[in-house]
Length: 118
Image 1: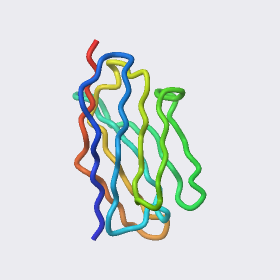
Image 2: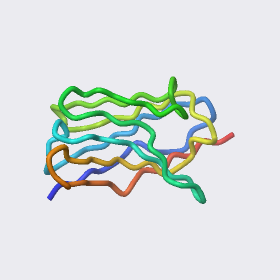
Image 3: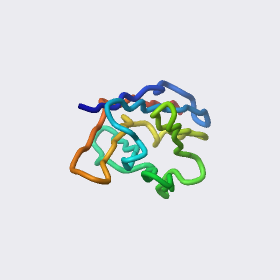
Image 4: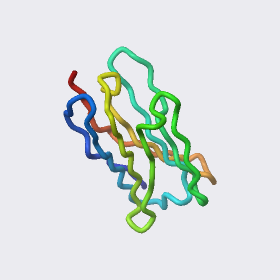
């Protein structure tokens, strides 16, 4: 049984930076599309960024493009979300999700809270 565990959240001032980590176990992230989602109180969940299996192509959603970067370290089986120039509207719980390319297997962590003070 696989799992993912997020870390790296915290409280930062506007304009600050954080790097979130998502450590996967029980499965190989190279076989999964790894995605970061976020959800703020009272708002719907939104995708932030994802990285494809195998080739590792990435996509950053327009709301954070130019400020956020997704990457992975396959040796560490870990996915990262580098967040720069954070804004109050980035305040949310951030979740890591892994979706298999070959089956219906999907894993999601409990999230890490990011709070940006104005």
